[in-house]
Each structure stands twice: as structure tokens, then as C-alpha cells.
Length: 65
Image (cartoon, rainbow, N blue to C red; front, side):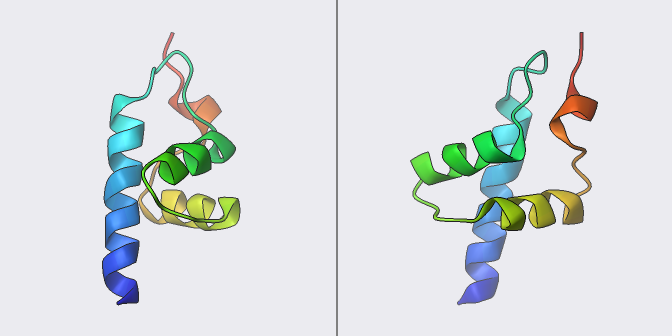
């Protein structure tokens, strides 16, 4: 049940981050919207928690010039 959805959300988060524009990385709020487009209904704080668990830095630290 819950473990599966967590795994799916983390997988989707990884794909979103892998394919984002590194000059304009998505903040947690935009990641929530990207997940909603994929059919996941998730709170921003949960996205932040998963992102941290996955070792993904905040948007400004992912920016590449």
C-alpha cells in the first residue's frame, strides 16, 4: 500500500529532477505541480521530506550556469 506509493512518488521525483532545466531547477512548489500533473496528490512538505531523503539539494543548489 503506502510503501508502493512512496516508491512511485520518489521515482517520479527523480525523473522530474533528472529532466528539469538545470539553469532553472524546480523548487518544491513546482515539483508538487509536476507530480500533480502525473496524478500524484502530495503536500509540499512531503515533497521536501522525500527530496531530502533522496539526497537531492534544494533548487538553488541544483542550479548550473
